[in-house]
Amino acid sequence: MEKRNTFSGKIGFVLAAAGSAVGLGNLWRFPYLAAKYGGGIFLFVYLILAVTFGFILMVTEIAIGRKTQLSPLAAFGALSSKWGWVGKLATFVPVLIFPYYCLIGGWVTKYTYAMIAEEQATAADSYFGAYVSATTEPIIWFFVFLLITTLVVIFGVNKGIEKLSKILMPLLLIITLALSAYIVTRPGSKAGIRYYLMPDFASLSFKTVLAALGQLFYSMSLAMGIMITYGSYLSKEEKIEKSTRQIEVFDTAIAFLAGLMIIPAVFEFSGGDKEALGSGPSLMFVTLPKVFNAMPAGKIIGALFFFLVLFAALTSSVSILEAIVSGLIDTFKMKRGTATVLVSVYGLVLGIICSLGFGIWSDFTIIGMSILDFMDFISNSIFLPLVGMLTCIVVGFVIKPDAIISEVELNGPFKMKHFYTAMVKWIAPILIFAILVSGILQSLGILKI
Image (cartoon, rainbow, N blue to C red; front, side, top):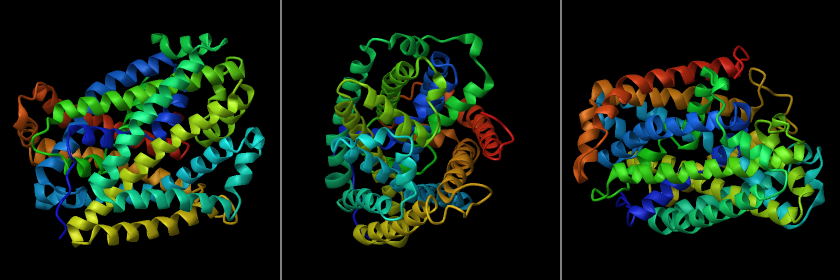
């Protein structure tokens, strides 16, 4: 068995974990949800949930990883032999997400190239649809993105993941700050800024809370086994509570700045129509290229934006692949290179199938969904909240909260331990159950959120 890697220090761990958390969820899902659910009031609710709910779950996962020194596939079995199956479910989430996340990463790679090459056609309504429905080109760009992800993970924790994160995360923050500053100082952006930053408590609803809670899950890489995996590489000398706060601040700052960048820009472009911030691929691949095309220096701004999204997508895809590879190394004693290539070949095959689901296999659907949409539904609406809820149950009632608290307190007192116990035993699992039910009902068209 290979010697277990560790991060070289706290900065490497925080940047790698923040890189995992900062992904497509921050840069395209957060802005359209904020626009849909009242702007400022959504932001207000999200921030409260981030420092409570998100903090509790992230501390739990990092502590489980460091306590067991194992990936999720083996960690839950080490905590309780009867509940080891939760680790299998936790590993199944990134297994499902990895192929289609890399396919979307390929789309981002293509658009980054198109913006640099100044392809004017990116602003056309038909450009994105024609691209994803093609047979060959999306697969080529998908392969490029997958290959970069694979090479980073093969190099391991220190030479691959940590080194990449130390370069990309500061760059990501600089580009986000620069683009946000440019957008908010443009004439016509004031209405969008006001809508985004000023909470309207009259528009607060249970749906707003559910939407913010669901976004928090995706944004902070919770219940995917990633934070358990990264926690297993964390030195016993580092403070879990402090590191978690720093990861949260970085992740939330990028999401906040993404909203500050995208909402005012689209508001100005659309004349104040928040419906222009459509959900899913339409915002990033259809609406935003039009916005950039209408701006002075729009091609430069567009290229920088898609570079930003590419960095975020890459750090997240690396963490998703690492969560799977780590499980194979721990459980089957595989060498890192062998495990990484094996998972990448699986990702390539399934990613090609997802890509063809928009083209020559577009007539094939599963309960009315494309192949990619169905995999996204199964992973994000069912398994992700289910794993989060089961993790809370294992910690709250099987191994007991003190098992996690004692791990956190290896380096000093856990200031929020009483709050932690109440959250992990009762509040968090109830709220996650609400996400699970609402996500299923929404995907089946029974509930509109």
